[in-house]
Image (cartoon, rainbow, N blue to C red):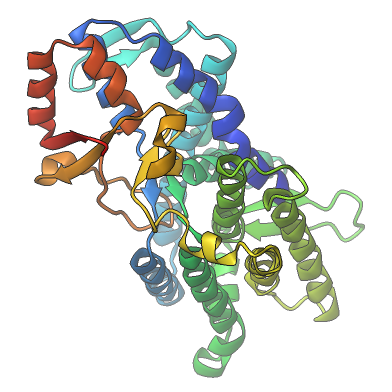
Length: 405
């Protein structure tokens, strides 16, 4: 289930969202309102590119939150986490369902209505949201029944898929910092913390004082006479998933095949890491194991070794940072020299003020400021909108557009 979630999230933008992106580009009209709407819609779907600083801060914040849970664990605190999980799970489920429906029924998102405070909203979104909200509420009200694991897994998988679409690693330099810190974090709070706090902080928080905390995927052991569940935390899927998704994007932009790329091998490595974690759990007589102890070497270690053997380690390490980058309609990064391949002939030269930045929050990821103008849209907008209107739009966004030299 964990491997399938990562594979689905990695392929999502290629086989689900990409069709919509290309169709929306083809449907641009000379109307000013359509062009402006395209900018607004695309800017709301910007990507968070994690940097080294955010990777370090993430682990520090995660440690602080873990300590708060350890010392102040109570029923109301757990219910706060449940409410937050329901909200984020509802958003993730809504995003996934709307994307899939639009992929199958391409014209279902054309009908829109104006709502007070919310502005223009599609009828499809209004119809899907109550279903997602009802699903989350039903799970929260029945989380102790035997089938509650299914609802938790659905919400969790949708949340992880959505998070992996919004948060991305630019290269394996950042991946090395993030996963190395997470590797040390997992080992410390599982194995070292008992020497300081007389018990494993991670295991104590996972047990939740008898109340389950919805921060993991679980599935019953159907063929085990003793019953119980097989479980894996969201972080053990999300963090390695960032690297696996990066490998897929790298293979795609470098036009690599299945066998000479990295995505397939990292997916296999992740699955092997899960197997090793189960073996470690068995050999340690059921003692809680930090899954990242096995997953990080089987993913990060594997891509480093493959890159070194193939002579591509330096390119993987500095990918996306050695030259100005452009973005295709899916938010992928390409070196500036390849901008013509994705139809871009402009670049963002300067961003003035906070009006040209967007802050996005994502489960377990720190928020960052980044450019909000998707470069892939500017040629079409410039060609179809009157020059005066286009200049006014750029002035409102405080973005200076200059031609590529």
